[in-house]
Image (cartoon, rainbow, N blue to C red; front, side, top):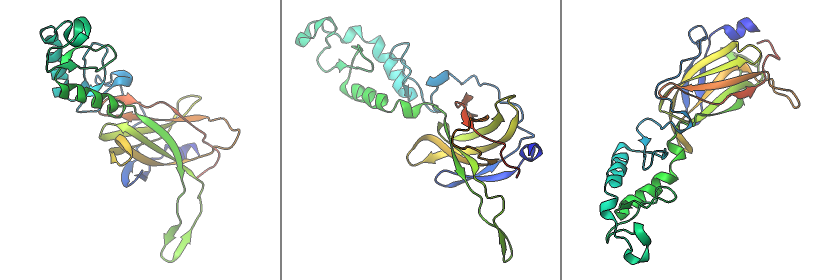
Length: 244
């Protein structure tokens, strides 16, 4: 069984459509190193940056929106009219409103800017490299040679699915928990899929799913976003029950 898992194979990956997966354990035996673009759980998808309306404001926005936030901050004092309309010392001059990008944000901006801030807040989670990963299963169909078809080795295999990745390459791994030994590896291209934020993918592995009620997982799967260097959380899997 061990030698079987070490052999690289080619499978197909689908979530909504089908993408090509290249399983190359010999090439991917070492885990990719972290990227300088990995800023933790607040890492933005490619094309977005932190808004920084205040230092801790990590809502992901376009570069133009961040530039606007910086400019509005620099103009904050000039746009105030203390006491105007009964709104206290941070009241805005006529034509301006509080930005409200975060609780207590009383920087005075033009009304469309406040609307933009609210929209960006609503979309914040969908613009982060959350690197979500979950497991499902797939079962091989019959193998046919001419008019003869067989259904051997039809045990369910592990399928790895993900979203909230950058568009581009994602690498996936299945390892044994006891010693982190690599049992399978492959890659897929994360693409836009309806109903999923960011880039999403599905990878069909050759690893048989051995999960049973009451049985503890003895391995884990993990995915790596190549563009940002972000890793997914480890997803427990149960492996090693059958010989392919």
